[in-house]
Image 1: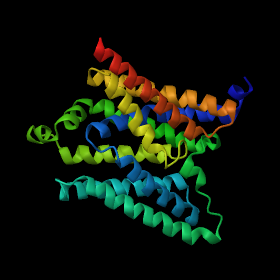
Image 2: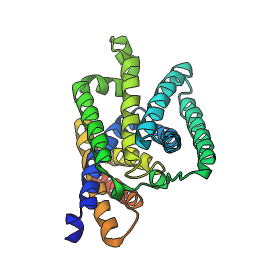
Image 3: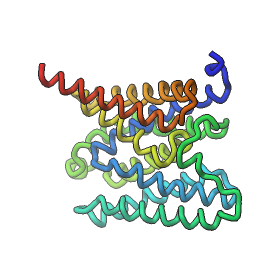
Length: 268
């Protein structure tokens, strides 16, 4: 009970619950469009921005967000240049992000440059500013997804048909990339840049294993994300474990349960 009443744990629950809605939701769109690796790409670029933020004395999450948004535009540009080999865009941008991060780490060796909490997550250190940023990202993502749900549905399942039908495909592609960048930048302090991709992709994998419609997929992906984050935080708090790692391992356990349930349903 002392854990529940602790202010740091309450902030962690609020931040985790919010990001557990937006990250799996955006992850579902990415997985269906075969862009699951974009999470790893943007998270590595975000870490470069975080490192630069520490060097310049600027709010690290903000700098990481700016880097991720710039990377999302670059990814979309490269995707259109290499349409047949779209995954090249992710490999190129990820390489650049890692290179910049290593450069900034080297420059910061003589300073108090500590980005480990952004690499592995540090949800228990969330402050009011972090919660405001996460809440703002949640409102923006849910607002735009709700407003353009029909367009996003069509774009996700048949981009060519959407283009023929007059849908501004480029606009919506950029919007999805920017929303993903927002979510990743907000999530890296919760689960860490090295694990944020799991929060984007594993709930989507669980949802695709169990759902029979797109609407069901959206509901399941959010439920799985919330269950893993809240239960993971509780277990990590009680047993003094790493929160980010605990959440990801719970996600993997839920995926195993979902795949087992799917196999049994197929046999019936």
